Length: 347
Image 1 (tube, one colour):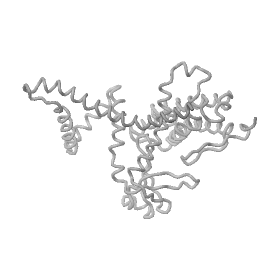
Image 2 (image 1 turned 180 degrees about the vertical axis):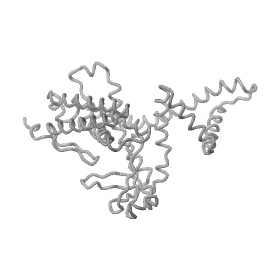
Image 3 (image 1 turned 180 degrees about the horizontal axis):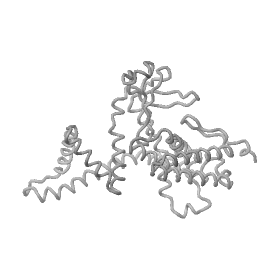
Image 4 (image 1 turned 45 degrees about the vertical axis):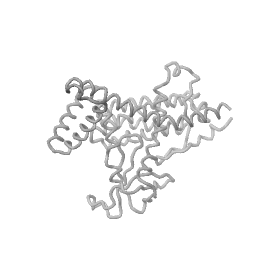
């Protein structure tokens, strides 16, 4: 009875909350902007010249004019100089880079240049959803005329990969680009849920032996560990070239360290309590967190040799844990409920 009531409540919450948050954010932006600019206008403008809404109109006009100016070469160079200066200011650069990357993702021309939604077969039963951005590949004539450029976004992570794939290996999906993009970004909901659940935990909860994760250990592996380990290991010979790529790699190392911490606690999985009760499991989890911290320090120092060492340690840790507890390794970026070792099923 209580589960039914709770389920109905949360279904209603998922329907009302997005609308409520959208309205609240819209009202907050409007009232805050109007309130700040109203004080300025009342001070500098003649009496009775100000009217409610003037602040919003001015802000919209300023944004539009800025957009026009940023198309000019001189203004663009001045803006790049200003951004470079901001990125040298401690603390400010961290906030600015995060906000800039976030809006850069949603204002990018990926969705504009994407002509079709594509599905790439990885050959092991797994598939990736991407977007065809170039069917001619005139700039890559040496690659061959039988390939197309497919952009594969990384869910809530900023950016993605552009793959040159043979046309025969690409299946065109009959769905709008916008719908497919929403599908890809929906994957971030589970990851964000895990991050938020960790950030809102009371310190006493972590100390309690009875604490349980709100999701299974497998879901933590899928959401945080699986797609964070490989980029760190690969970075030893595919070195990031831009500051944004280095920041993304730092985020992956942090994500992996958090995942190693979480899997030391049982979740909703059927074997989670059995695994986490074993000292070797906790030892592997601690070793993964330590290796991730080592990788994060190496990435911040941009020390390729140290990154390689940490990457090898991460791989060895993952392989050792899987050999002890879960023999089938996840592949292809698509993961279901992984099967346990036979010994774990014994009473």
